[in-house]
Amino acid sequence: MPDQTQFKLIAHSESMHDILKRIDTISDSDSSVLLIGETGVGKEMVAEYVHRTSSRADQPFVKVGLAALPPDLLESELFGHEKGAFTSASSEKKGLFELANFGSIFLDDIDDFPINLQSKLLRVLESSEIMRVGGMKPIPIDVRLITAAKIDLREMCNRGLFRSDLYYRINVVPITIPPLRERSDDIPQLIQHFLDRFAPNKQLQVSKNAMEALIRYPWPGNIRELRNIIQRITLFANSEITESDLPDEIQSDNPIETLLKACHRCFNEDNMTFEQVVSCLEVNLIRQALQQANGNRSQAARQLKMSLSTFRDKLKKYNLESE
Ligand SMILES: Nc1ncnc2c1ncn2[C@@H]1O[C@H](COP(=O)(O)OP(=O)(O)OP(=O)(O)O)[C@@H](O)[C@H]1O
Ligand SMILES: [Mg+2]
Image: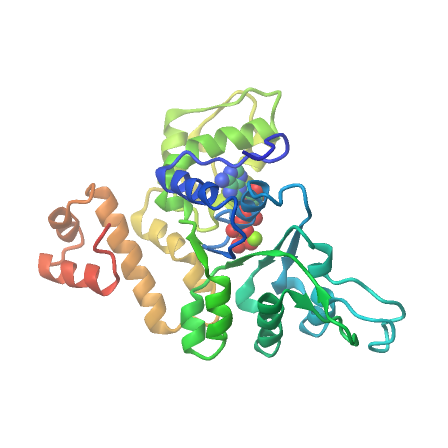
């Protein structure tokens, strides 16, 4: 188990339990791990858990936010450069791969990795050697790779935006972290965790109604959104947190509004097609109806005013038959 003093990963739900168990079973391995999940689900935290439970735990853990790095600096940031490699290279510089040597490197937002550099990354992973920009001799490296993506990389491979050979190389152990709305069992413990963290001296309680509203809310921004809201509430609350202390969108019990929030990501994503947005809405409606009907399909179909056969067709179409 990792050192828990600075790092506390809440995993009360069965799905999170299973994820940690799976990671524990590969703690002795150097396999590449790909974490997949919506924004704020805890990909970075799980990446750190992978490192902390591995045999490399005492070695460096280097996090790289690819979305935030300008593409023209990426190669020299990752692999380093020699003195004079380009105009501003006044001295030699180690890259992030070299800094992560013997430890793990976490490449966040791997879907943002530019296609023109993907073959170079693949070569580095295959050969365990890097070549600094402007360098002549390969440098051996021993790094465990952990990556994260918010979107389906297979889809990107099909569209020619991601090399499939690189995808197979990074996808040795894929781990999908479910959105918070699909593991609401975690919500009470996460709330307690953030209350302890942001208001350790206030001993705040959450009323039953407020807790129910917090559990019902679909959390489009996942744990990050929950953390921010709890942090804000702790500034003003003094004893019990009641429903009126919660932001309006959480108090509201309007199903359409709730659903639109669950689909928040679709409406804000530039590259989603009309069809993808509609599919996402359908999937969320179906999931919500199934959840409210405790998995009873006839009841869920009735609730959506849909025939059972149409409902079944949709479960099949969206690969939801196991839900
Ligand atoms: N299981 C958890 N227990 C406690 N805190 C968590 C957990 N998962 C996430 N958090 C907290 O929620 C916030 C968001 O988590 P994190 O940055 O790991 O998400 P992410 O999936 O990497 O998000 P993004 O896709 O936007 O980069 C962080 O403050 C993190 O500490
Ligand atoms: Mg992240």
